[in-house]
Length: 405
Image (cartoon, rainbow, N blue to C red):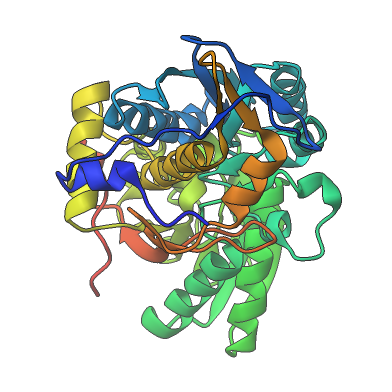
């Protein structure tokens, strides 16, 4: 089992001790196959997910974190250079399927980080699992991806992101208990993420005594939100909860302020909208908007952010950079644990053993908390918090402040 994180040790200013792979005269056998890495050739890991379009910041946020984790180790592992490749999956099931097929056909890849959007995983995970590969997502939150009853095509899938069973319940409790709201409307965009999250919210909110007066839907790529908002205004809810993504979230937020009857309605989104790009798109209408997103803090996290900004030249644009860093370190630690060194310097990474080592992760001290992975792939340790968009955020400050009452 994996209990360490060299990356977190580096974040705390500690000395990371190099780990040598055991030496064997012959390549190991593994039912899922073995990745063979000749002497002086790189260990290849891949990051896949939304890297272009309106949701690009969701993937780029933790792709940058992968770079930090690799840099923390001096760009090498077990005497081999570390090489990272990326594949854009467009935040759609179709994009996920295409990206995963391409990655599955690359025999040099040892392990993966991703995807960014739950829909990408739905479309692509079977191809990766069937190729013997294992991926760890920093930002997928759909409950079904780690449901104990999930199918065998998900054997190659884990995540460090929280489960929306947690986030949906948090939003419902925040709305009912903290804000004192009693009626709500929900909006989803047809994605696996949004449909599941609004349903969890609805279930918990109504169980507490609240009423969901109407449940509406929009499409990804839609720009005119006024018909849906006008329909919602007729029911006069205290809250509109719309856990959608960056572009559509910006249109929804901006146009809600223009619909009669919604002037005093509370607006709330979730981590799919937790983006400086969303705030830019919505403009001043975003002031007062609540967002649920991961709560990460502490000295190690602050040190990581400093390295992130120094290495990339940008602030983290989204909510899952710490989760990406933890996922990458879990993967790299697992590679160290199972790799076998040939007498000529060739490195062998058995893919089945690697998968089992990742699933056996226990007591991993990450930026997001102490991580223990379940047999259905949930490795999320972090809490969820509520943030509020202020004038300072609209003026360019990021991230938004935590809600403090």
